[in-house]
Length: 216
Image (cartoon, rainbow, N blue to C red; front, side, top):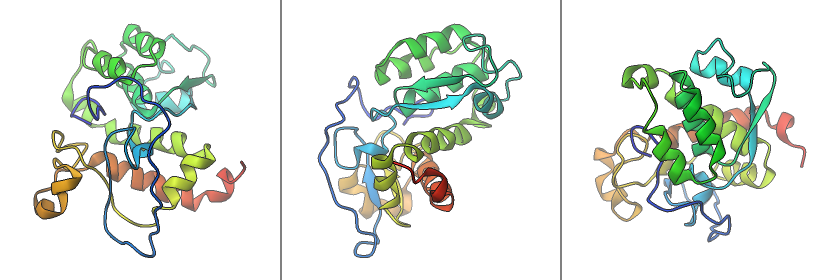
């Protein structure tokens, strides 16, 4: 992710068929790196295809909007369906600044690349105001993405308490600023890893409320 998006690279919507890698937190205590949606651990990428819903009232609470997240969904308890976490984030980003036109356009495309592009065009955008809510938005999106999909939930919980790190060499804000290949040699210089931290918060929440989400 970069400072205004979750982009892992310039590619369109990925296939959900990705390489598999067994995670056993009892054997390996090191960080778990992820980046591209079609690579190992791609499920943790914001661009990974994942259908989930979030209520307009929850979105309004997240972004501080009293108008129920824009006039695209006027009923307070209506649920909006998202195709990936990137779409959710960019929808909320536009909603933070009452840009309902961009919200509609974000929902209209299934391409994470286009969703990111639209997010960079939000009218009235202000870094400081977005900074106030963006991490909470990504945490909420991650909970919605992983909690109700048992395959994704099992993947996330199987990481135990290991550090999750977005190994994006170009992004020291949402990622660590280094590729997985070079990450451990430069750990003292890692970036903020906001996406990895959001995923770990979501993991803790889902684990604590596992009985709520255990139905398959």
